[in-house]
Amino acid sequence: MTCPSGYAIGNRNRAFPDSAMPATLSNVDFDLQSFLPYLLNQAAEAASRNFLPLYRDSYGMTRTQWRIMAHLGKFGALTAREICDLSHVDKTKVSRGIAALESAGLLSRRPSEEDRRSEILSLTDRGRSAFADLGRQALAFDRVLRERLGARDSAILAGLLRRLADGLADVDPAALGGR
Figure 1 (cartoon, rainbow, N blue to C red):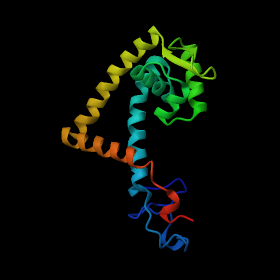
Figure 2 (tube, one colour):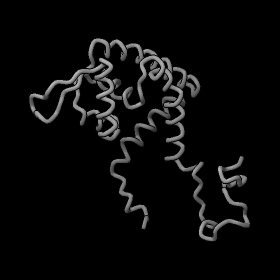
Figure 3 (cartoon, one colour):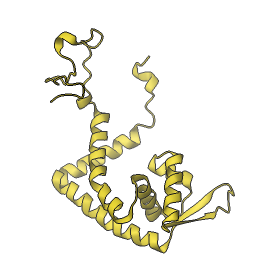
C-alpha cells in the first residue's frame, strides 16, 4: 500500500522509508490504524456512508437532515438546541438542516411558549411519512449489520459502545499527560 506522497507503507504503517524517518518520530509507537478512536470513527463512517444513499436518493437529505428527522421522529417536538445536544451536531449545521427540511415541507416551527427566543420543531404529516419509510429502511440496515456480527457480538458491541459514550464525559484531556 502507498500513501498519497508515494511512499510505501510498511508493516508498521509508516509513510517514510526507514532512512528518511524523522528522528523525532522514530521512537513513537503510535499507530493510527490501532488507535481506538480512529477505529470507532472508521466504523461509524463506513456505516454512515452505506446508509446515506437511502435517505439521499429517496428524499434528497444530508446526514444532518436525516439525524434531525430521526430525533424528531423518535422524541416528537424539540428545539434546535435539544437536537444539537442529542445529535452532537453543531448549531450551524442543525440550523441549515432545519431550514432545508422546512423548505421541503418535512418539518414545521412554532414559537416556544416558555422561551420566545426558541422555536419548537415538529415533523409535518409528510415528514412523519418520510420518517416512517426511512425508519423501516434503517431497521433493515441495522439487521444486516447485526447479522454480519452475529447476535452475541452485536449485543456485546452495542453494550461496549454505550459504555464508551456514557463514560467519556468525565475524561480530562489535561490529565492524560499532554503538553
